[in-house]
Image (cartoon, rainbow, N blue to C red; front, side, top):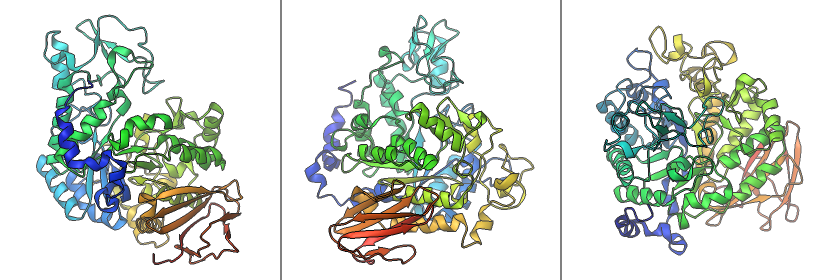
Length: 570
């Protein structure tokens, strides 16, 4: 494993050697070369976004029709959920063919036209790369289970006897009972996820080669990057068990090297819910691993802060995740396609978040999280929602937003597990929210209560300058006007209030200071800046001059302030 594909290393070093040298990185123009650092990423699922042909399911042609909407919103990149052929037992994450487009979503020609139209508008496309496992209906697994002598047998992980840790390490506790299932062949196969998703064996060089072919194929279709699903499980060394397995991080360097030899500015965004001390293994030495990672550690403590107003764990999390390679980047999010994972909080902290944001057991999932959209979690409190999203766009990293959150969409708890937050997009007040002209959508559109499409939809909010959609578009423009957040260094400021989070970014002589009040009561914040600059308010024009080097800023309940230090036009 350690020696695989070493021949790529020289090519990679010649092609993008700056990633391996902190000294060389200092001379790299990060703003121009590393596009993912100053982008806003929009996550969507083709099947629930817009139906163009009236069959009740979204498709690529429908997505093309809505690209101008996304352009107006201000996003830079679309992250597509799986769109490859799939039985649909895990909403597309059970892939049956890595080299095709699911015919329910369109043809390869439709996909090519979508890529062309997105590129024409300057929108990059990132796709889910789900290579930890396949569907049990994938031809590889069908061949593997037919015979122990099949050339595909070793593409998966097998055991003659049921391992002792067969019931350890389930991804979906409470739903899954085991990670080993007996096959008709008489042996057991390994699956971190559901039993219909057998894990691929990345200790087999042929599997690694095939994963590179998959990456190369989609890069040739114009893809700009990949959201790498379930990263730690790809890295597991099978013989070390499922409870506390050893990991082979060389794979991440190999896969990055391969991808960058095919496309210089590719970006790999990893899903790895790990503690801060382990992140260096995923980003790699001097940034030789994944380009980006979701900051799950900070996210969990952020939700604790949003629920309780207690900022200390969140501030500590931001500090503990501060030191990463210069070319690497965190991705921050509020909601995604899964549950809010609170597994790294203490039991007491998790119960506090449950009490505020998901008090009913039907709102909770996998003994660790909440399966709701953000608006219902925050009781649809507009001020609280603005605080949360203003914070998201001001955190040190790349913001990732979920389709529908820009209008405050709700959830449907009648749907099983994580499908509750994957309901169709609400475009208009017409039948099925304008998502489809069919009598019935393949998945129900939210149609009742304060989150029903009749009153909560894009068309209505586009006509309202005070809507959440209008506000979101403005905050995205504000975020993109402050490259210091993406490219600069940062420090947390002591504010004199336990409820106010303040952060200062500096980049190339420019500086921004951003404050957020996590309390529903007004707060006064007092902090010092050595350079004694005037702070120019970027939202309300309420500029702040220092008394000496001390600043006092008043914030409304759930209030926020964005300042540029020294000169508003810097």
